[in-house]
Image 1: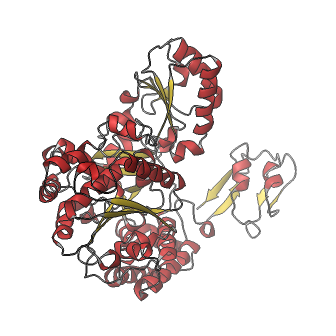
Image 2 (image 1 turned 90 degrees about the vertical axis):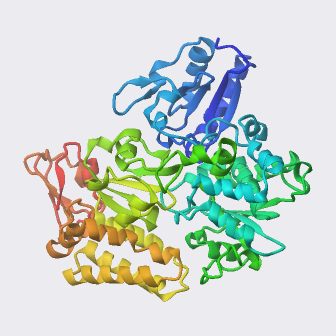
Image 3 (image 1 turned 60 degrees about the vertical axis):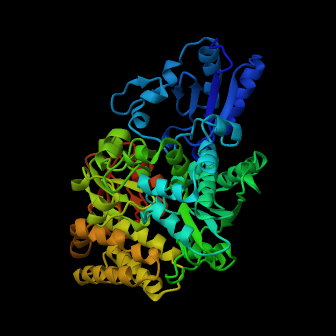
Length: 598
């Protein structure tokens, strides 16, 4: 047996793995060990490991053997052969998508070894519901340091020197933001953690909240000490029930350990943290809308100035940082600003987490130094495009970001470089597309999201995004014109410069970058009635190849509208007038005899 009290079975219980069945796997391990009366091996639940496509994930420590996609049926073998017999279960190991070789150790998997995990440093390594685990891994060491060794202004200067910029999208220097709030006059000040993550496909903040909640609390405590705040709020969306649950546990544990409350650790510092659950409005990611929501009002932005640092929550000086920004703070204080500033580029320091989704072989969370290229992330860390298809584009920065073609694969991912292309770093969402993706349809998808999420306060955003969406609808149906492409571009520019808040100001970004780099696809849709990707149903037709069709009748049987006719053992036909273009016939054809005519 792999003996010793240090032997532990780490099971991911982040949302992704839980949905894949990790709770059942955890129970199976407990039952199996109990049945065998093995008491010296601990089962540890962890937060998200980041490699979500491989869940449920099990890691045997201290050796670091990595088992992906573990099922309940696999558990007896892992216990018998590995935990008892001391032999790695070879056929259950991760297989690298580039080399097709089995890789036993967590640290040797390409997805992990190419990352630099600062924010995600504890995710997958500690039990997020156990404060002692966090402390054992250096937790609250930074908070104790600032209380005993640093004046508030020293803390602000250290964050300034690190070069940390806000990871929520705008990239404003964090230390400067803290300095504004510290110098603002007011007897009451607030710290707010913006955990209202709402970008489609983004789950960076959720994973940190679920996997390392105490790092957020510690970052808020240090920020509170630095600016003179005595109260903090975590604004988390209610759709993140596991994150909210673990935050509540962490707050209570921190209070019992003496890190929250009055006269903290024998000092004169008083600080409390409250959790506010948001209703899921995307606009509440905007600072002033978020504060309005905390105050019990409808989440709508207001004109700035005054800025939150001068007049924020309930009119008091307020500092707002997002989850990822705050998760960097303790690491910077513990390791030094110089070490953080040595990572990244000249103006974009440290690391950034990206949530990689779409047509990649290995999706998940990737934390890399600022300045890493898109090619390094997509083709090296994430293993390239599914089914080895051609890379087409990447939407970076979420629904407020930009769509970049293959010519930008070697661009440095930092605030300045991406801004020059028309895209933004944003919060870190990254959707990868291959040749089967339609740019016009994707533009419509993102506009549909931002248009629905508009709070409606200002006309450019409320009406402008709706008209843009309607134009894109007509283009995907073949009902548009060349003139409308020009009008779409003009309207997008107008919405961008005249909207009240960041939602409306950035909503046109996907459309503008897609028009800039993929204009020919828009023109094909309106001039030729053609969708080269075969996605826009109004512009395609399903056709049966006569020389391939065996007349088996499977397609005819599954067609929901009776659009297919033909005698058995003779080629069938699809009535284009009746066909609703659902694609069910092509899915069920056993001979690949049906294709899309574009």
